[in-house]
Image (tube, rainbow, N blue to C red; front, side, top):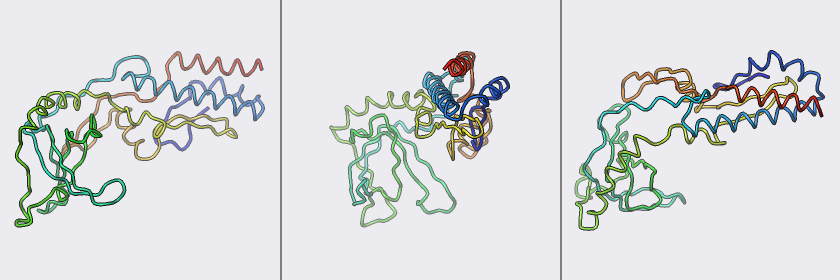
Length: 252
């Protein structure tokens, strides 16, 4: 068993050395069934340890390093004038108890600016940080260069109590919870070659490789080296299950 065509995947080289001959002696149908079982099983085991924030050997992932306090402690309230999911224009009131502002690209215009934060007014935004494009925030018609940030009122007093909670959530939320889903973590087989594979494809593979091997990446205009966080890997239990699958196939 091996991996082919994956940018960041799970290697089966240790198993391949003593399982390859056995697989070749199976019929094509039985080999395909066996490879499917192994690929599906290992995909679940990878998802399980990622969800538990652990390396394949059971060691916990290195924790995130504390970042510079770029979260603004001052609430921000504005009217956001953008398009909704149905592609029609929809303006809504937004209240961000904590927020960050970013700018990408060169030049003095504001087209590259955006704000991220938790919208306290929109219930669909709970625990999900949204992106608000700077040029979609409502502008005063009398002055196109001035942004209309609204003053707080009595309805906003209770919302301020969420500031500390959002900051903690943003820094301590589990890592890799999105890419461990079936949308990004894939598995499959190549029956003709006697191969099973588990891994990430496309752009997500680059992210996985960075953490898998502890590589560097440009972050906030600086080069940052990430600690090794193994997203994919075999442990003793994985190897024993693979061997049990092979033994069961021989006894059928």
